[in-house]
Image: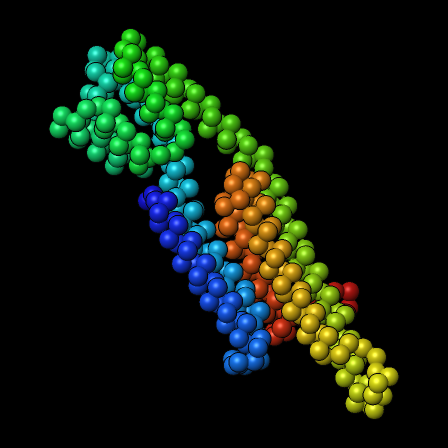
Length: 300
């Protein structure tokens, strides 16, 4: 996957939020009865759609960029090891980098080849190295670049320094992988909690709210009037809107918490938020608003 520059991510955020606000404006106009799109399309649908539009494109951009950065970091130890091995054969540091550029290091390869070409054109090594780090600007790669530049200036047994750097990077990646493995069960717990929340709402509507609303209408039909029992339609409609908004909020913030716990960044949870909001909205339309499917529990 290619790198997504910060400028592009900012543009994606701005455009997505503006489109989300447009959806919110349409929802407000429908609520104000300026126009109507039919009973099956409600203002809450535009709110859910607006939130999805606001978070889905940035989540995709962030995922692509994160995947690219992971590829940079995962290939970095191999690059450091190969540079050290090349130097042991008697090659200079710029020459070792040139030879290493002929191998495949995933996302590192294109920029490594550019740096090797710049060195061959006579561009100073430190300038070519800084250009390389400006593009492949992950935290680990920046550390490795500083180490390479300092090693190139100081001289000495540089290959030993590269070996130490390679082991250090591998240790950091191993710790990161271990942490992600330990936190992954908590991400699944968050998903489970959200789906249980959604299931409880669906069961509550299908086994309590809708039967109570039907009871109210039956009492109206037999002429009880003000003494009717059950749930009036307007109150049922309010509950429907309220619980849909609760579902959207639950999905949005549960996803952000999952990203913070699992990857250390709330922005990494945008993909989880997108999935939860989308599943919650579709489930709500199918099981509650349109009642296309029913869930039978305990003979209800």
